[in-house]
Image (cartoon, rainbow, N blue to C red; front, top):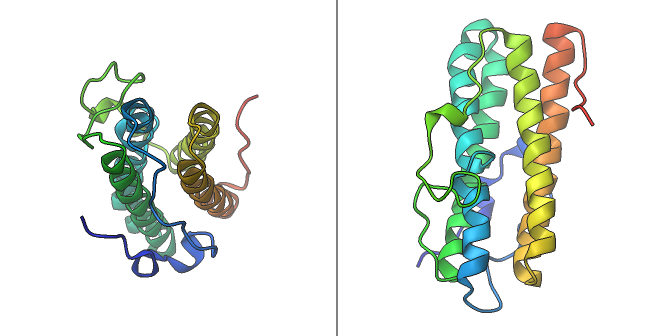
Length: 184
């Protein structure tokens, strides 16, 4: 199996500057692999984020070059997260099929998970909301998974998601004149 070259995936301002931990697990564990499947390709997942952000990129690049670049580069960072999760799932003994676990009832991923929207401001708010939901899911999974190696990986991914919230909020202020905080 190929090791991930994290330096080649650094996206400058689109990810946190701290290093990614090496993808390691304490031991194979199919239960942990199943938990991570939701982060990988569930309803709230890296695959959903990639797909949603790329769709928004296709629209936003027509409006503003920098806004398009933001969505493109954030989606590339999310691809890196998906790669890390696939390697982790594999090392746990799982199979990184494009499906979730509990959130999809073990069904394959669906384009219905994407917020498409028709309004730039609502789309940016949905992108911010997706990042907050991802952080919440990662925090829950850190509590469920008693493997310090995996916990470190998820904590590092959370740092990037926080950068994405900040960047999306900057874009929301610039293009919509507001900031978005998720409902409590």
